[in-house]
Image (cartoon, rainbow, N blue to C red; front, side, top):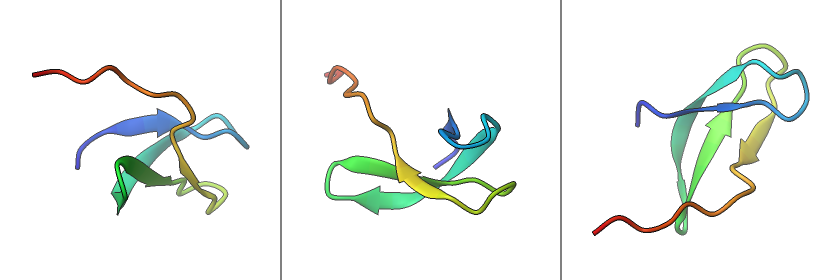
Length: 45
């Protein structure tokens, strides 16, 4: 779980904290917002 995503509130990099169903959940250290990535990535086989 070393993925990062841009926080939708403050724009900082947020670290992945776990999974919810098939989506990765992120938490921003700056503003403490917990969010899921809002776009689907293609599956890689």
